Image (cartoon, rainbow, N blue to C red; front, side, top):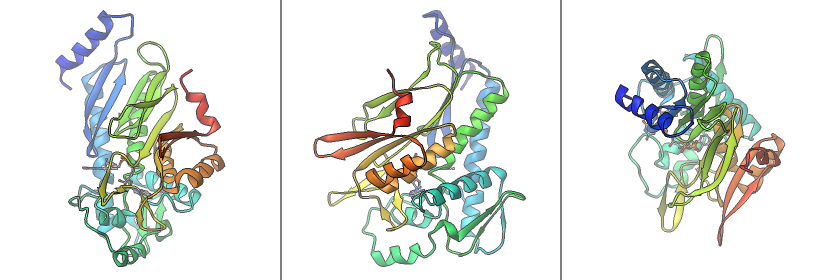
Length: 329
Ligand code: FAD
């Protein structure tokens, strides 16, 4: 952001009210946008935030052919493949949540994501044949990879394994920016990357940060407002990235058990957690499992979860007890 915009934002807020001035940094990364709000303003923060996010992007993207993940996916497997510490931290967490969700969350779904047209290739909405799914599914399963923290390496046991970190890496990127702002001793901030959010302290009105959860339809209204101060929140849903064919909705969340996009009525899952990476992964795991199984997984893991489920009259809501702590009174 250039100096003029930065100063304008500060002036407009501090002159017209007793609110604290807030500095807003924005940009693009991982095929989406980011926004950071702090009460400390400097161009150094803008460039540091952008370079942290660019580093995560170029390490973990399947849209950049020289990323660790793209090169790992092209490798034929069996040897330890050196990657960055950030990548092993993300894969380590992904494997833990894969095990806890019975494989519903599974980063080895990359080739199925691509098959259904939700990966880096061109968007294809043509019919997918069961034979093709069956062939690709033999390389899907979180037990087909291993991760080593020191030295940071990944290993695949089948050459065709293709990992995709889209359901967890944005959350990790948010946590990395939070780590950086903490290192500057900034006590109040808001970080959002592609809808995954983490906040600290209070907003410019000295209140908890108010976060809106979208209604999962084309109108995109606000379904619920929550108040957070030292938490992260991530939402997964079938209403952003999908296509319809012959009246059937195909969304980008793949059930590794069937090799197909989810077909149940759970339209949106929001998870509140200390870590944005963990919230991001749980939101996808619960989305895969659907309204009942997903809700039981949330209860078993004491998660603060809010679900929006499609029904004949619109939407119904379902939440765990832990989620009530964050509802706006
Ligand atoms: P979430 O619900 O958080 O995740 C859904 C995604 O996770 C799916 O799109 C799929 O990729 C994957 N997934 C599906 N099923 C499962 C499952 N069962 N278990 C685990 N994962 C699953 N998009 C672009 O268009 N251009 C880019 O240049 C680009 N670069 C990116 C770089 C990085 C490092 C990452 C992480 C993503 C990038 N993306 C890019 C993708 C985009 O940012 C979003 O990640 C994507 O749209 C999904 O985010 P979401 O929050 O909507 O969905």
